[in-house]
Amino acid sequence: MNIASIYEPIQQEMARVEESLSRVSQVEPLILSRLLEHVLGDRGKRIRPAIALLCGKLGRGKPELLVPVATAVELLHTATLVHDDAVDNSPTRRGRPTVSATWGDVPAVLLGDYLFATSARITSDLGNLTVMRLFAEAIMTISTGELMERFGAYDWTQGREQYYQRIARKTASLFSLAAEVGAVLSNAPRGEIEAPRRYGYNLGMAFQVVDDILDFIGDEAEMGKPVGSDLAQGTLTLPAIILLERYPEDNLIRGIHPGKQNEGKVQQTIEMISKSHIIEECYQVAADFCSKACQALKDL
Image (cartoon, rainbow, N blue to C red):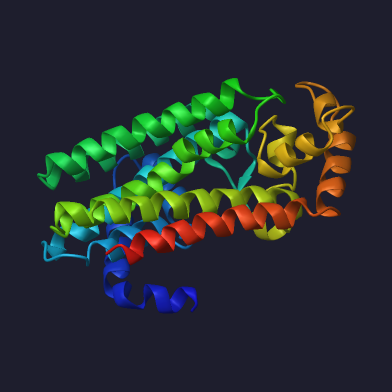
């Protein structure tokens, strides 16, 4: 099974989501329109809105509500990326200059706020209090995860449990939101909404674990950011955590500090991890989360 076959049942709806996102960019003043086109024109795979649309086919709800909620999910996701890039001083995203690198941190933060507000407006127009509450809770959860990452930077004492808590808030919560709001708007029975929520959560966890693996072994041109950028910024991810577990003493990671020349230590750490079995172990963790996601769907 490939991406195309997964998206096949929702091709028409996905096209309408793209049209809806395009309309979001058609605003005044012109500079705002340019900023919106910059961040919304890079389509990516649109995984989160696709999940919302697919889960929206579980029941017999109003199909006309699914495209707006999928649009809102993508706007929320884009807002978090714009803010992330400003906080992390990221020069590129998917190989393109970020808003913060091109126009500055203040415009980036304000653009992120605008996207959050637009997402909220769309969800309020749906007239479903449950969906509105779920979006608000997701924003709170994602913000908490960002704070955990920010204040945990360069803290090399963190373990797996803290890592899982952080990525659950930062990443899995949005996947979970997409699946749950789709199921809610499909009018699926209450007992059948928990399964999509668990599916989204576990898929999001697997997604982030793999993303963190690629930070050590991925192709810089394909990823659109330097390999090892998370570690260089003090963000402790699963491959580095496992390396610290295996070599608790005299570990190069512990010598990485903010404001210091860390390129050599980061590069050596990347080589140690890529030449060990740590990557395979991390992929197994991701596979376990995928198995849990599939099991959640079997419960339907």
